[in-house]
Image 1 (cartoon, rainbow, N blue to C red):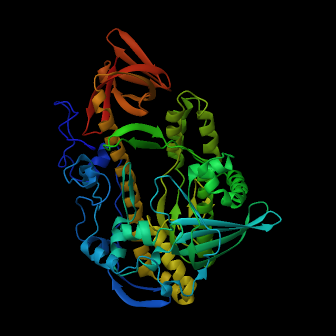
Image 2 (image 1 turned 30 degrees about the horizontal axis):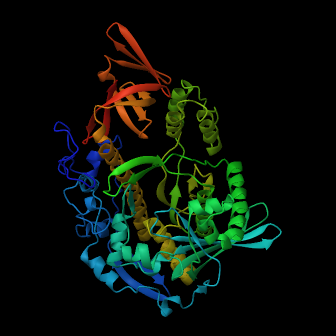
Image 3 (image 1 turned 90 degrees about the vertical axis):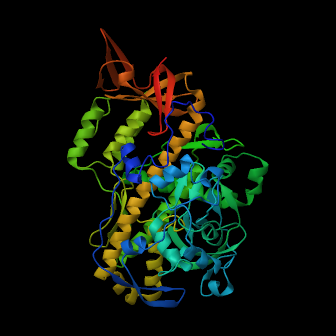
Length: 594
C-alpha cells in the first residue's frame, strides 16, 4: 500500500493484489476488458545509415526492430526515484508494473553511455546551428511537469500575420542509432505516466536535464518556423537545428491567470511575456476556428488527478483543471506536427504517421442504434466527421447522464495508431480532420517522434542520398515494425496508467468500507451499474446480483426483478449505496444498496 504497512488499513477478508496473481500484462488487460495488440513479426534485416551533426554513421549492420528489442537485458526491479512504493519490489504498484512488463530501470549498458554525456551542450555541439538564444522563447507546462520538450515563440509580422516558432528538444543529437540508449528507447517506445510516478523512455539525465528545455540554460533544439496569414492559414514553413535558451518556465495556471487579468506576484513575474502571450491568444483562436470549420473533433474530456498527503497516501481525487493556455500549447504542437508531416509528403517520402481511421459502417450502425435509445441521433450519411461527433457530444452535455453518453458516443471513433505512409498512400486522421499528420513534438517520451526527427535531419542534411535510403524495402519493413511496436506500447502504457489509478482509488477508499455513501448512477448495463461516489469523485460497481435476479436495460434505465417487485435505476439519478468491499484483484470498488 502507498506510504504505509501493507498489513494495515485492510480487512482480513479483502482480496489483496499479489505479485504472482497475474502472469503478464495481457492477463490484467483482459481483466480490464481490453485485448492488447501484438506487433506484426518483421521478416527482414536492414543496413541503417544516418547522419547526425554532420558526422556520418555508415554501415551499422543492425538486426530488425523486433530483434533489437528482444536482445535487451531484463530491466524490471525497484526504481531509484519517486515514492517509496516504487522502490519496494513487493509493493502492489510494482506488481502491476510487472504485470504490464514495464521496464522500470535502465540496464548497465545504458548507464555507461549516459556517464559519457555532458551536463550541458558543448561548444562543438552548438556549431552550425541557428543561434536563437537572444529570442523570447519559453515553455508552458503543468505544475508538476519535469521534462520540458517543447518551447514556443511568436513574432508579429504586421497586417495580422505571425511567425510561430516551435522548438523541440533535439533528442536525436544524443540518442544515436546503434547505441544501447537507442535500443532501450525503442524497447520502451514511450514514457509511462502514473498517478504518482513517471517511468521514462530515456534516463533522467536526458529527459529531465540535458534534453529538457529548462529555463536559463543553453539547449539543443529542432525548430519549426511557420508563417500564418491574417486568417490563420499557414503560408510557409521551414525547419532547422538550433540552440535556444528558454527565458521562462511557465505553468498553464499562471499563464491563464495573466491572460485573465489576475494581478499577483506570480503573474507579475511573467508580465514581460504578456505581449507574446496575447499574440498567441489571437493566433490560437484563429486555429480553433479553422479546425472547427474543417470538422475537427475538439474534446475536453475529464482527467482525474490524485492529491497525496505527507505520507504519500491519497487524500483526494479531483478533476484536472482545464485552461485555455493548454489549448494554446496544443495548437502549436498540432501546427508543428502538421508542418513536418507536410514536408515529408511534399518530398514524396515515407515516415511514421499518426493514423486515425474511421469506423466501419456496420460498427457505426450498431452504435447508432444504441445511442438512439438514449435520444442521441447519429446523422445518416456516407461518412461521419469530427463535427458530427462534436455536435452529439454537445447534445449529450445537456443531459443528466452526460459523461456516460459521451463514453458511448466515443464508440463511434477508432483508436489512433502509428503507421508508415507516403505521398501516395496518404495518412488520414479522422478526429483531427487532417492528412499527413505525424508526431514530432515529444521525442523525450515517444519513440516515433525520435524517428521522425532522425530522418528529417537526414533528408535535410543529406538530401537525395537519405531519401533513397528511406525508400528501401528493408527500411520500410523495419519502420513498420517500429510503428506497430510503438502503437502496442502506447496502448500498454495507457492501460497500465489506468490500472495504477484504479489501485490508488482502491487504497483511497479501503478505510471507508461499510460506510453509507451518497452517489449517482453513472452508467447502466445488463450486469450492473457503475456508480459515481460524489463526495470522493471516484466510481464503483453495483452488480445486478446484489439487488435481484436479472437486469434489463432500455435506454438510460436499468430494471431489476426482485421477487415480485421491480426496481428501476436511471443514469444521472441519485442513489444511496454502501461500500461493501474493495476488490484488489479486479481493482474495483464493490457496492450494495444502502
